[in-house]
Image (cartoon, rainbow, N blue to C red; front, side, top):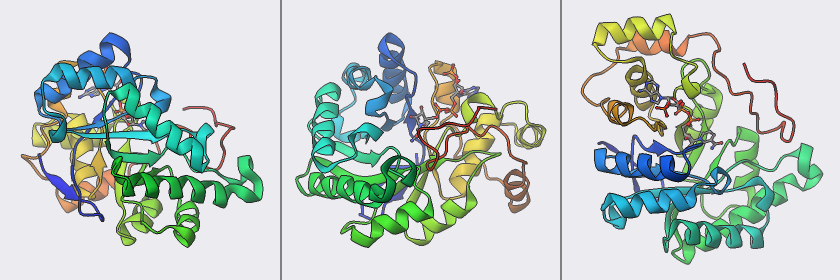
Length: 284
Ligand SMILES: NC(=O)c1ccc[n+]([C@@H]2O[C@H](COP(=O)([O-])OP(=O)(O)OC[C@H]3O[C@@H](n4cnc5c(N)ncnc54)[C@H](OP(=O)(O)O)[C@@H]3O)[C@@H](O)[C@H]2O)c1
């Protein structure tokens, strides 16, 4: 497994493990399987209702806590200084941990739901994140689903620059402007839904490139993500796929192949946009 160095000096594996919708027995089992298969980086969130299961999976895996990077996120309903601190305490309790490696703002407050106060709401959450980092309760802090306008506004008052921006990023929807804006600031981009929750499978461009490399479409997508300098957190509850999704460091895509994948017309977009919450567009 290769690591990326974040702008705060902390190391993070280039492939992590997603856990959205993996709950109860399935959640525990998949986290345990992932850790025992070699993953050392887990992604959960208060909203996923599985922090207890992720914590249990960590325990059952037998892998020492200090070898694992654990991420959680503060949910949209807790966009204040005090609520963020309480939310972190609750996440730690459920995970049975005494610190997190990475804590993210799950979605930015925006004008639609906070009116003129949206910048201040994000700034207050961020101030709490900075304090939690200073207290040693979280090692790295970052954001998710932030567009350039949200990042710019946050940086007006931030003392610490976000280490990560976790965004929807997969073949067919990869937000190149957000990627460039984040990377130019030294913020590492992390891809959520690297397979568009399964909607990339069957794409002919990806299938052709997969055949050429004797790899699977999932491995081509992950390799394309990694070659963009982006971290990926594929989710699977299937042991074979969990292992398959780690096998992306023994081949390379050519520049032409990267461009071909970059140019795949829009597909698989979740319909979730940071500025439209609470309204959500129909899914395709
Ligand atoms: N920050 C955010 O707002 C946000 C939003 C969405 C997701 N996330 C995070 O990103 C993680 C990943 O995204 P995601 O769960 O939405 O979707 P995803 O990882 O793109 O896709 C997961 C789907 O792909 C299937 N799959 C996995 N590996 C496969 C393989 N090798 N071959 C064929 N099918 C495969 C899984 O099936 P099985 O499980 O049945 O194997 C599952 O149905 C989440 O779990 C979550 O941690 C964050």
